[in-house]
Length: 328
Image 1 (cartoon, rainbow, N blue to C red):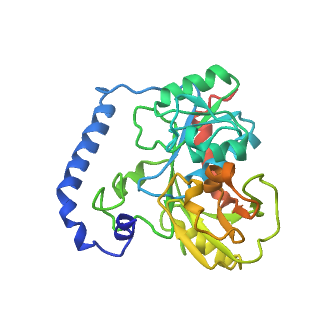
Image 2 (cartoon, one colour):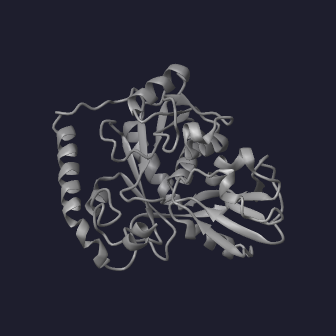
Image 3 (cartoon, rainbow, N blue to C red):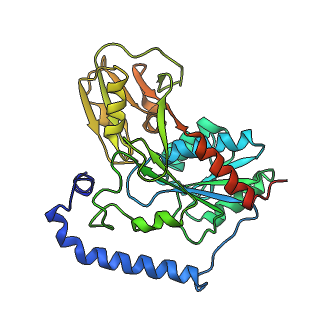
């Protein structure tokens, strides 16, 4: 957590200077790797259907998963049969693996599990994206559009459209590359993307803005819709930007006595909640709920959110798809 606080402070934290040599090595290796893919020394894989990559250039959560869900549902409305691939970060495998609503988050990853519950479309996870796509199309031959949740830097996978997601509140942090800053790639990389979208923020600095709109509260152990939780409550979040969730609760008028921030993809277990009084409500994100369902109590609740975009984003995405569409 120290690193993220330092990366997203205004200006360069002097304590990070010792990492300068490592940043130079990281930049050199990243440049060489991409150059080898660009000139064909390293082979790429092109899927037989269009591939849309939704990723970011920085470390930490930016809102990719709600964007992925929104794009999938929009694509269905346009007549496509979309599917999702993902690395399955945090999942133990084995890979490749199809993801269903009954999959365990510790096996397939928390975000793929959430997307399976929210979209109902075919999903396959594997660090090998070619393997994921091959497995996906073997089992779902009707698919004619693949959405990759993350994978912007996975240059072995050829892509037709790139959508880059930026956190509008935290921006690009101190602007430095890893490990001196949060950037996997330089800011100039945004110019190469087909579409850039910005999650919140006071003004549009990077691209089309979207907001995360809270839905109705649900109980973690059975997903049943409930009214706003009443009584003593604490909030926990194991996402890239926990403060965003805590701010959402405050804006919704929900009173919490304590907040607990964990690292992104934290592997929650019952032991994490052992010291909390049984009568205390526990409030969490939908992503965290995917990992807590099997041991959750009746007074544990999560707040789903959906990405709400400006109309211009959908128009631009449609234009991009029309240029590359394999749609029958």
